[in-house]
Length: 172
Image (cartoon, rainbow, N blue to C red):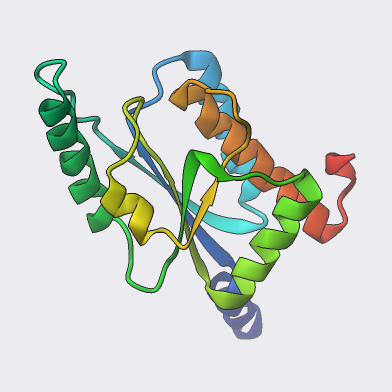
């Protein structure tokens, strides 16, 4: 019994830790269900933690108010990131990948760090300080997606990447 316990501890230690930091919460039940499904599927591959940052809403439609709101979001995002983490920001202007290339990129990151952090900003975007903190910027498309839907898309692509790396037939 003791040996199995130590193997489990070692497995948990070696497992990639992914933190998803998202500004705003999921409101639609159908999206919540999809997100829960992919979180459950990912459990066998990674240790996933999701942190929702309440979105700072600008008091008025003015560039200074928007800048202040994004700075407030950035403050909370920074507090949720560990120093050793490999940070990837999801940004429409980021690098795009095919699913196999994304899996390969995650595998390369996993060789550098055991802590991978994804940041999804608000509908107003992200403060430049968060973009500058990131080691990489990724995009899934030049299209704009609702941020709630994008969280589901990210989790599905992470699951797809893990199945590609494990040789599981899901990705086909």
